[in-house]
Length: 170
Image 1 (cartoon, rainbow, N blue to C red):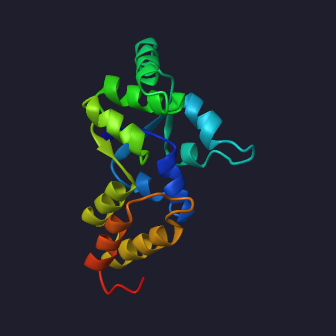
Image 2 (cartoon, rainbow, N blue to C red):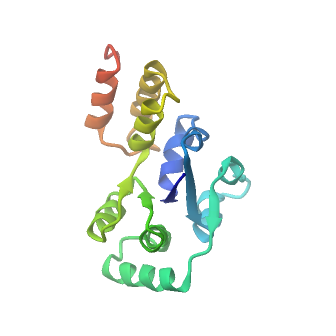
């Protein structure tokens, strides 16, 4: 089982294409700062506890993680506190960071943290036989349709994946 520290934007991507449960079919346990989960994902009020019900684990950051997050935030003020919490959890627990945020990805790589994103999850779902090529392609087309709205993914990567898995009708 692989543990992965998660930012909230990944879950927005999966929610936008009605696939919130898909990542939980991988042999991974996703962690998120309980503060980020409560403030970013569960608001506006009434959004529910979908991620927790699916298996996401809300974790409290340690004192060491908190001070590291503060130090990162002082160097990278455009990152939110919750972004730096996700990075701190990944760094101090020796696990990958799951995010689609460009600034956070760059900072994590500079800090020696492995970074994964939405497309990695879809690629793993396909590689592990959880999604068929047809299902995978349908999700890539759905991502393309939402890209620039709720989702912000590299268009060229989406196009490449659609093309690799069949006739390009997008």
